[in-house]
Length: 205
View 1 (cartoon, helix red, strand yellow):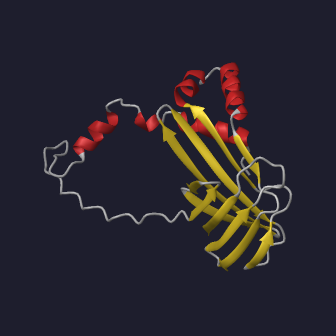
View 2 (view 1 turned 90 degrees about the horizontal axis):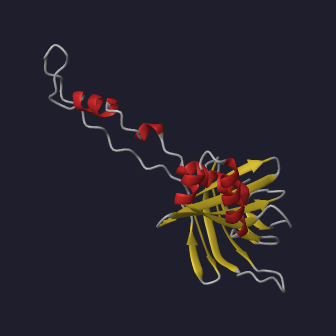
């Protein structure tokens, strides 16, 4: 399960430049020689390349909810069944200017036994979010002290809602996906927004 600290580390990984993006001329030269109608080293025309079949978009599942008056929708949702527990995980990434924000929803059902009504335990279920300044993250790369300072600053601003005693209703369950609804009301005196109209269709991993 991801913690706010691991979310910061993940955000750093998201900023790492891919080696495939470095332009050394090799990739472009290879692409040019493979274009339809190009010639090989002997000067012979190559056969036109066949058109690639359209790729089927991978089903990542879905999840949404209202956090107070804010409507939240995940980029995808996954379900994992370990021992007697079922965990539902959904997340989304938001880019805004020079910052990236990641939010994750975790719902954990102990003693899962198929479709039915459940209540989450006192720990495990949560909604967390952490933001990171992209420029600062790149500048801190390779500098452990600076990276630690940035991580601590990000953690200090992180959102963290423990969703104990959230109600979950599993409406459908199969070997490939699990669907349901959920809601959460904060305990008296807890200054957190309620979660309403939650729903998910999670892909079983």
